[in-house]
Length: 291
Image (cartoon, rainbow, N blue to C red; front, side, top):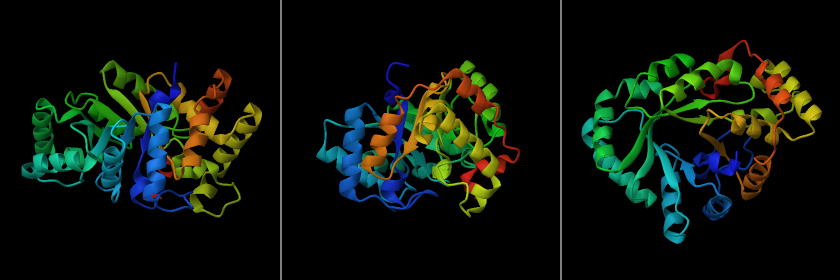
């Protein structure tokens, strides 16, 4: 892997909303958002993941693009969960205007259910793709059943799925191979499981307690590998050859710098095998939407 930073996509939910189990700083200020975006772009991160549902994140990105026209990002954004086919073109043009870009790199369906219930919208998006307003259409998924369904959906060229130290190769591996055989672009999210990996195992949070044994194993691996949890979590995702891009979220420029530094860590093969051997019995515990 020549430059692991080129695989990173910066998530922007914290620029528009309070978000994350371990986020103590709240929504990022406009000034701090600009500093984060500038640092990211200069470092080689060229794509942002955002959504209309992320508060005013679209506007923040658009204002940044106006202020720094030489540092424009590729944009991945998402259609609302429920949208009328007749209003899609207006909505996409609104996004382009808000974001200050000429086309969207990827337009995602927020969820598998949203994709299934908006087939008319998908046809309209294909029309907008042919007009050059969208490069790719994608779906954000949670389960392996959903991934399997998308294998045969030729119009869907991007699949965004969870992947991390616990939601790992033992859970997703075969499907990563199958998605690539079908020519799909794979984006992964939840590299840090919304900050759960940084919680102390003594924390009274109910999810922490239910995953205590798994978190203890990860802490042991960190100790044995003489690395940080950021380095372990990021390198595990970035190492996967079948994964095209890894989405991360940050709450400050310092936090971004920590992740930039962590992305250069080279994970050992035997460490990967140890992580792959961690098998969480209740997969619902790995789904933040169910917390």
